[in-house]
Image: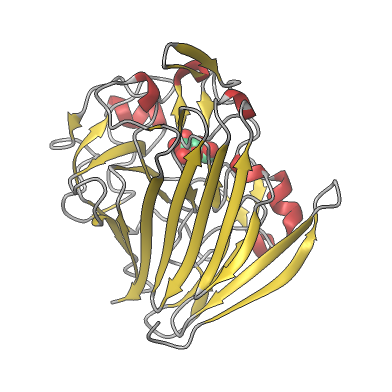
Length: 350
Ligand code: BGC
Protein backbone atom coordinates (compact mmCIF):
# COMPACT_ATOMS: atom_id res chain seq x y z
CA UNK A 1 0.00 0.00 0.00
CA UNK A 2 1.31 3.41 -0.93
CA UNK A 3 -0.40 5.51 1.71
CA UNK A 4 -1.13 5.33 5.40
CA UNK A 5 -4.37 3.41 5.77
CA UNK A 6 -6.02 2.17 8.91
CA UNK A 7 -8.59 -0.47 9.69
CA UNK A 8 -10.38 -0.51 13.04
CA UNK A 9 -13.06 -2.77 14.41
CA UNK A 10 -15.84 -2.08 16.92
CA UNK A 11 -18.88 -3.84 18.37
CA UNK A 12 -22.11 -2.88 16.61
CA UNK A 13 -24.74 -4.54 18.75
CA UNK A 14 -26.42 -7.91 18.82
CA UNK A 15 -28.85 -9.86 16.67
CA UNK A 16 -32.21 -10.84 18.19
CA UNK A 17 -30.64 -14.29 18.89
CA UNK A 18 -27.72 -12.70 20.78
CA UNK A 19 -25.11 -13.07 18.04
CA UNK A 20 -22.58 -10.20 18.05
CA UNK A 21 -22.29 -7.87 15.09
CA UNK A 22 -19.20 -5.82 14.33
CA UNK A 23 -18.39 -2.80 12.24
CA UNK A 24 -15.07 -2.15 10.50
CA UNK A 25 -13.85 1.32 9.58
CA UNK A 26 -11.42 1.58 6.67
CA UNK A 27 -9.64 4.89 6.35
CA UNK A 28 -7.33 6.42 3.75
CA UNK A 29 -6.39 10.04 3.11
CA UNK A 30 -9.38 10.40 0.71
CA UNK A 31 -12.06 7.97 1.91
CA UNK A 32 -13.58 6.59 5.08
CA UNK A 33 -15.68 3.46 4.51
CA UNK A 34 -17.59 1.40 7.07
CA UNK A 35 -18.60 -2.23 6.65
CA UNK A 36 -20.69 -4.32 9.03
CA UNK A 37 -20.62 -8.08 9.46
CA UNK A 38 -24.46 -8.06 9.27
CA UNK A 39 -25.18 -8.75 5.61
CA UNK A 40 -21.66 -7.51 4.76
CA UNK A 41 -23.34 -4.12 4.23
CA UNK A 42 -21.32 -1.13 3.13
CA UNK A 43 -22.75 1.25 5.74
CA UNK A 44 -21.00 4.48 4.92
CA UNK A 45 -18.59 6.07 2.43
CA UNK A 46 -17.37 9.54 3.37
CA UNK A 47 -15.52 11.68 0.82
CA UNK A 48 -14.80 15.39 0.33
CA UNK A 49 -16.42 17.56 -2.33
CA UNK A 50 -14.48 20.05 -4.51
CA UNK A 51 -14.45 22.52 -1.57
CA UNK A 52 -13.27 19.97 0.95
CA UNK A 53 -16.67 19.46 2.60
CA UNK A 54 -17.00 15.84 3.71
CA UNK A 55 -20.32 13.96 3.40
CA UNK A 56 -21.63 10.42 3.28
CA UNK A 57 -22.28 9.47 -0.33
CA UNK A 58 -24.13 6.19 0.24
CA UNK A 59 -27.54 5.75 1.83
CA UNK A 60 -27.56 3.88 5.13
CA UNK A 61 -28.76 3.68 8.71
CA UNK A 62 -27.28 4.91 11.98
CA UNK A 63 -27.46 1.55 13.69
CA UNK A 64 -27.95 -2.18 13.31
CA UNK A 65 -31.68 -1.79 14.06
CA UNK A 66 -32.12 0.08 10.76
CA UNK A 67 -30.51 -2.75 8.80
CA UNK A 68 -32.58 -5.40 10.61
CA UNK A 69 -35.76 -3.64 9.44
CA UNK A 70 -34.48 -2.74 5.94
CA UNK A 71 -36.30 -3.98 2.84
CA UNK A 72 -34.35 -2.03 0.22
CA UNK A 73 -30.92 -3.68 0.47
CA UNK A 74 -29.09 -0.43 1.33
CA UNK A 75 -25.40 -1.26 0.84
CA UNK A 76 -25.99 -5.01 1.15
CA UNK A 77 -24.13 -7.86 -0.42
CA UNK A 78 -26.92 -9.65 -2.26
CA UNK A 79 -26.76 -13.38 -2.88
CA UNK A 80 -26.66 -16.24 -3.48
CA UNK A 81 -28.27 -14.93 -6.67
CA UNK A 82 -28.45 -11.13 -6.91
CA UNK A 83 -31.29 -9.77 -9.10
CA UNK A 84 -34.26 -11.80 -10.34
CA UNK A 85 -34.95 -15.43 -11.23
CA UNK A 86 -38.29 -15.85 -13.06
CA UNK A 87 -40.87 -17.45 -10.75
CA UNK A 88 -37.88 -18.54 -8.61
CA UNK A 89 -37.52 -21.61 -10.84
CA UNK A 90 -34.57 -23.06 -12.71
CA UNK A 91 -33.16 -26.40 -13.80
CA UNK A 92 -29.59 -27.51 -13.28
CA UNK A 93 -28.11 -30.85 -14.37
CA UNK A 94 -31.64 -32.20 -14.97
CA UNK A 95 -32.93 -31.22 -11.49
CA UNK A 96 -35.57 -28.54 -10.93
CA UNK A 97 -35.19 -26.04 -8.13
CA UNK A 98 -37.64 -23.60 -6.57
CA UNK A 99 -36.59 -20.44 -4.72
CA UNK A 100 -39.54 -18.98 -2.75
CA UNK A 101 -40.76 -15.94 -4.74
CA UNK A 102 -40.38 -12.67 -2.82
CA UNK A 103 -40.98 -10.03 -5.55
CA UNK A 104 -44.15 -10.06 -7.69
CA UNK A 105 -43.99 -13.83 -8.09
CA UNK A 106 -40.25 -13.87 -8.88
CA UNK A 107 -37.21 -14.50 -6.67
CA UNK A 108 -35.19 -11.33 -5.99
CA UNK A 109 -31.71 -11.04 -4.44
CA UNK A 110 -31.47 -14.65 -3.31
CA UNK A 111 -35.01 -15.16 -1.97
CA UNK A 112 -36.78 -14.12 1.24
CA UNK A 113 -33.73 -14.62 3.50
CA UNK A 114 -30.79 -13.66 1.33
CA UNK A 115 -27.12 -13.15 2.21
CA UNK A 116 -28.00 -9.59 3.30
CA UNK A 117 -29.74 -11.02 6.38
CA UNK A 118 -26.93 -13.16 7.76
CA UNK A 119 -24.05 -12.34 10.08
CA UNK A 120 -20.83 -13.03 8.19
CA UNK A 121 -17.60 -14.04 9.91
CA UNK A 122 -14.86 -11.49 9.46
CA UNK A 123 -11.13 -11.09 9.64
CA UNK A 124 -9.01 -8.02 9.19
CA UNK A 125 -6.74 -8.03 6.13
CA UNK A 126 -4.22 -5.38 4.99
CA UNK A 127 -6.28 -2.28 4.11
CA UNK A 128 -9.63 -3.88 4.84
CA UNK A 129 -11.81 -6.74 5.94
CA UNK A 130 -12.63 -10.16 4.54
CA UNK A 131 -16.10 -11.55 5.23
CA UNK A 132 -17.18 -15.16 4.82
CA UNK A 133 -20.59 -16.79 4.77
CA UNK A 134 -21.37 -20.48 4.46
CA UNK A 135 -24.80 -21.01 2.93
CA UNK A 136 -26.11 -24.54 3.51
CA UNK A 137 -27.19 -26.96 0.78
CA UNK A 138 -30.88 -26.14 0.25
CA UNK A 139 -30.66 -22.60 1.71
CA UNK A 140 -33.57 -20.69 0.04
CA UNK A 141 -33.94 -23.73 -2.24
CA UNK A 142 -30.49 -23.44 -3.87
CA UNK A 143 -28.43 -26.62 -4.30
CA UNK A 144 -24.96 -27.04 -2.78
CA UNK A 145 -23.14 -25.73 0.27
CA UNK A 146 -21.80 -22.42 -0.95
CA UNK A 147 -18.87 -20.70 0.78
CA UNK A 148 -18.85 -17.04 -0.23
CA UNK A 149 -16.06 -14.59 0.56
CA UNK A 150 -16.26 -10.84 0.10
CA UNK A 151 -13.17 -8.73 0.71
CA UNK A 152 -13.45 -4.94 0.98
CA UNK A 153 -10.10 -3.09 0.79
CA UNK A 154 -9.31 0.59 0.51
CA UNK A 155 -6.50 1.81 -1.77
CA UNK A 156 -6.23 5.59 -1.55
CA UNK A 157 -9.24 6.90 -3.50
CA UNK A 158 -10.56 3.43 -4.41
CA UNK A 159 -12.72 0.90 -2.58
CA UNK A 160 -12.13 -2.55 -4.01
CA UNK A 161 -14.53 -5.47 -3.55
CA UNK A 162 -13.26 -8.97 -4.35
CA UNK A 163 -15.85 -11.72 -4.39
CA UNK A 164 -15.18 -15.43 -4.48
CA UNK A 165 -17.23 -18.57 -3.97
CA UNK A 166 -16.98 -22.34 -4.04
CA UNK A 167 -19.57 -25.09 -3.80
CA UNK A 168 -19.82 -28.82 -3.09
CA UNK A 169 -22.64 -29.38 -5.65
CA UNK A 170 -23.51 -27.61 -8.92
CA UNK A 171 -25.29 -24.34 -8.13
CA UNK A 172 -25.79 -20.80 -9.43
CA UNK A 173 -24.07 -17.68 -8.07
CA UNK A 174 -24.45 -13.95 -8.70
CA UNK A 175 -23.03 -11.77 -5.94
CA UNK A 176 -23.03 -8.00 -5.95
CA UNK A 177 -23.05 -4.93 -3.75
CA UNK A 178 -26.30 -2.97 -3.53
CA UNK A 179 -25.09 0.48 -2.44
CA UNK A 180 -27.24 3.51 -3.26
CA UNK A 181 -24.87 6.35 -4.15
CA UNK A 182 -25.75 10.03 -3.99
CA UNK A 183 -22.75 12.19 -4.84
CA UNK A 184 -24.42 15.30 -3.37
CA UNK A 185 -24.17 13.62 0.02
CA UNK A 186 -27.02 11.76 1.67
CA UNK A 187 -28.42 14.96 3.23
CA UNK A 188 -28.83 16.98 0.01
CA UNK A 189 -31.33 16.32 -2.75
CA UNK A 190 -31.83 13.47 -5.20
CA UNK A 191 -29.72 11.97 -7.98
CA UNK A 192 -31.67 13.29 -10.99
CA UNK A 193 -29.15 16.04 -11.83
CA UNK A 194 -26.13 13.73 -11.61
CA UNK A 195 -24.49 12.86 -14.91
CA UNK A 196 -24.05 9.24 -15.90
CA UNK A 197 -21.96 7.47 -18.52
CA UNK A 198 -22.44 3.73 -19.13
CA UNK A 199 -19.96 1.71 -21.18
CA UNK A 200 -22.66 -0.44 -22.74
CA UNK A 201 -23.97 -0.73 -26.33
CA UNK A 202 -26.76 -3.11 -25.31
CA UNK A 203 -29.11 -3.92 -22.46
CA UNK A 204 -31.51 -6.70 -21.53
CA UNK A 205 -35.12 -5.48 -22.03
CA UNK A 206 -37.60 -6.73 -19.44
CA UNK A 207 -41.25 -7.70 -19.10
CA UNK A 208 -43.70 -6.27 -16.56
CA UNK A 209 -42.11 -8.36 -13.77
CA UNK A 210 -38.66 -6.95 -14.70
CA UNK A 211 -37.58 -10.35 -16.04
CA UNK A 212 -35.36 -10.19 -19.17
CA UNK A 213 -37.07 -11.25 -22.38
CA UNK A 214 -33.75 -12.83 -23.43
CA UNK A 215 -33.03 -10.27 -26.14
CA UNK A 216 -29.84 -8.20 -26.06
CA UNK A 217 -31.15 -4.94 -27.51
CA UNK A 218 -29.16 -1.90 -28.64
CA UNK A 219 -29.42 1.16 -26.38
CA UNK A 220 -28.98 3.47 -29.39
CA UNK A 221 -31.97 5.75 -29.93
CA UNK A 222 -33.50 5.00 -26.50
CA UNK A 223 -33.39 6.78 -23.10
CA UNK A 224 -31.02 3.97 -22.03
CA UNK A 225 -28.23 5.30 -24.25
CA UNK A 226 -25.59 6.68 -21.87
CA UNK A 227 -22.64 6.47 -24.29
CA UNK A 228 -22.21 10.17 -23.72
CA UNK A 229 -22.97 11.79 -20.38
CA UNK A 230 -26.64 12.46 -19.62
CA UNK A 231 -28.28 13.54 -16.41
CA UNK A 232 -30.33 10.76 -14.91
CA UNK A 233 -33.46 12.94 -14.84
CA UNK A 234 -33.27 14.08 -18.46
CA UNK A 235 -35.13 11.13 -20.02
CA UNK A 236 -36.47 9.31 -16.95
CA UNK A 237 -40.11 10.12 -17.84
CA UNK A 238 -39.64 9.50 -21.57
CA UNK A 239 -42.47 7.91 -23.52
CA UNK A 240 -40.69 4.56 -23.74
CA UNK A 241 -42.15 1.18 -22.81
CA UNK A 242 -39.05 -0.01 -20.92
CA UNK A 243 -38.89 3.15 -18.84
CA UNK A 244 -42.59 2.86 -18.00
CA UNK A 245 -42.35 -0.81 -17.02
CA UNK A 246 -39.61 -0.05 -14.48
CA UNK A 247 -40.85 3.38 -13.39
CA UNK A 248 -37.47 4.79 -14.37
CA UNK A 249 -34.13 3.03 -14.81
CA UNK A 250 -34.00 -0.50 -13.46
CA UNK A 251 -32.18 -2.37 -16.21
CA UNK A 252 -29.19 -4.59 -16.74
CA UNK A 253 -26.66 -3.14 -19.17
CA UNK A 254 -24.47 -5.46 -21.24
CA UNK A 255 -20.99 -4.06 -20.71
CA UNK A 256 -18.70 -3.63 -23.71
CA UNK A 257 -15.60 -4.72 -21.76
CA UNK A 258 -14.36 -8.28 -21.68
CA UNK A 259 -15.82 -10.43 -18.90
CA UNK A 260 -13.11 -11.58 -16.46
CA UNK A 261 -10.88 -8.57 -17.17
CA UNK A 262 -11.14 -5.21 -15.44
CA UNK A 263 -13.10 -2.71 -17.53
CA UNK A 264 -14.91 0.55 -16.81
CA UNK A 265 -18.65 0.00 -16.41
CA UNK A 266 -19.91 3.43 -15.43
CA UNK A 267 -19.02 6.89 -14.27
CA UNK A 268 -21.10 9.46 -12.41
CA UNK A 269 -20.39 13.17 -12.01
CA UNK A 270 -22.21 15.56 -9.69
CA UNK A 271 -21.83 19.03 -11.17
CA UNK A 272 -22.74 20.70 -7.85
CA UNK A 273 -20.31 19.06 -5.44
CA UNK A 274 -17.81 18.13 -8.16
CA UNK A 275 -17.72 14.59 -6.81
CA UNK A 276 -17.11 11.75 -9.27
CA UNK A 277 -17.52 7.99 -9.08
CA UNK A 278 -16.03 5.48 -11.49
CA UNK A 279 -17.05 1.82 -11.42
CA UNK A 280 -14.63 -0.75 -12.81
CA UNK A 281 -15.41 -4.46 -12.86
CA UNK A 282 -14.71 -7.93 -14.20
CA UNK A 283 -18.46 -8.60 -14.50
CA UNK A 284 -20.32 -8.71 -17.85
CA UNK A 285 -23.25 -6.55 -16.68
CA UNK A 286 -24.36 -3.73 -14.43
CA UNK A 287 -27.87 -3.12 -13.10
CA UNK A 288 -28.49 0.62 -13.14
CA UNK A 289 -31.35 1.28 -10.72
CA UNK A 290 -32.44 4.88 -10.17
CA UNK A 291 -34.11 4.29 -6.79
CA UNK A 292 -37.61 4.21 -8.33
CA UNK A 293 -39.19 2.23 -5.51
CA UNK A 294 -37.88 4.44 -2.69
CA UNK A 295 -41.12 6.11 -1.66
CA UNK A 296 -40.38 8.16 1.44
CA UNK A 297 -41.37 5.42 3.87
CA UNK A 298 -37.71 4.73 4.73
CA UNK A 299 -35.87 6.99 7.12
CA UNK A 300 -32.12 6.66 7.01
CA UNK A 301 -29.11 8.05 8.80
CA UNK A 302 -29.60 11.30 10.74
CA UNK A 303 -33.39 11.08 10.20
CA UNK A 304 -33.13 11.74 6.47
CA UNK A 305 -36.20 10.55 4.52
CA UNK A 306 -35.37 8.40 1.50
CA UNK A 307 -37.81 9.52 -1.15
CA UNK A 308 -37.87 8.45 -4.82
CA UNK A 309 -34.51 8.81 -6.66
CA UNK A 310 -32.63 9.60 -3.44
CA UNK A 311 -29.86 7.21 -4.49
CA UNK A 312 -28.68 5.24 -7.52
CA UNK A 313 -27.35 1.70 -7.64
CA UNK A 314 -24.74 0.39 -10.07
CA UNK A 315 -24.82 -3.32 -9.30
CA UNK A 316 -22.06 -5.10 -11.22
CA UNK A 317 -23.30 -8.60 -11.98
CA UNK A 318 -24.16 -11.37 -14.40
CA UNK A 319 -27.47 -10.74 -16.15
CA UNK A 320 -30.77 -11.26 -14.31
CA UNK A 321 -32.43 -14.66 -14.70
CA UNK A 322 -29.33 -16.15 -16.35
CA UNK A 323 -30.19 -19.70 -15.16
CA UNK A 324 -33.16 -19.52 -17.58
CA UNK A 325 -31.33 -17.99 -20.57
CA UNK A 326 -28.73 -20.18 -22.24
CA UNK A 327 -27.62 -17.22 -24.42
CA UNK A 328 -26.50 -15.25 -21.31
CA UNK A 329 -23.06 -15.78 -19.71
CA UNK A 330 -23.44 -18.72 -17.35
CA UNK A 331 -23.86 -18.25 -13.58
CA UNK A 332 -23.36 -21.94 -12.90
CA UNK A 333 -20.65 -22.96 -10.43
CA UNK A 334 -19.45 -26.53 -10.23
CA UNK A 335 -17.65 -28.28 -7.38
CA UNK A 336 -13.88 -27.88 -7.68
CA UNK A 337 -14.20 -24.57 -9.56
CA UNK A 338 -13.76 -21.17 -7.98
CA UNK A 339 -16.01 -18.22 -8.76
CA UNK A 340 -14.35 -14.79 -8.71
CA UNK A 341 -15.22 -11.24 -9.44
CA UNK A 342 -13.81 -7.81 -8.64
CA UNK A 343 -15.40 -4.37 -8.63
CA UNK A 344 -13.63 -1.11 -7.78
CA UNK A 345 -15.40 2.13 -6.85
CA UNK A 346 -13.06 5.10 -7.38
CA UNK A 347 -14.02 8.43 -5.80
CA UNK A 348 -12.75 11.83 -6.92
CA UNK A 349 -13.63 15.45 -7.62
CA UNK A 350 -13.45 17.64 -10.69
C1 BGC B 1 -33.70 -4.11 -8.35
C2 BGC B 1 -34.92 -3.25 -8.08
C3 BGC B 1 -35.30 -3.43 -6.63
C4 BGC B 1 -34.12 -3.00 -5.78
C5 BGC B 1 -34.36 -3.12 -4.31
C6 BGC B 1 -32.60 -3.65 -7.45
O1 BGC B 1 -31.48 -4.44 -7.64
O2 BGC B 1 -33.31 -4.05 -9.68
O3 BGC B 1 -35.99 -3.64 -8.91
O4 BGC B 1 -36.41 -2.67 -6.30
O5 BGC B 1 -33.02 -3.82 -6.11
O6 BGC B 1 -34.87 -4.31 -3.98
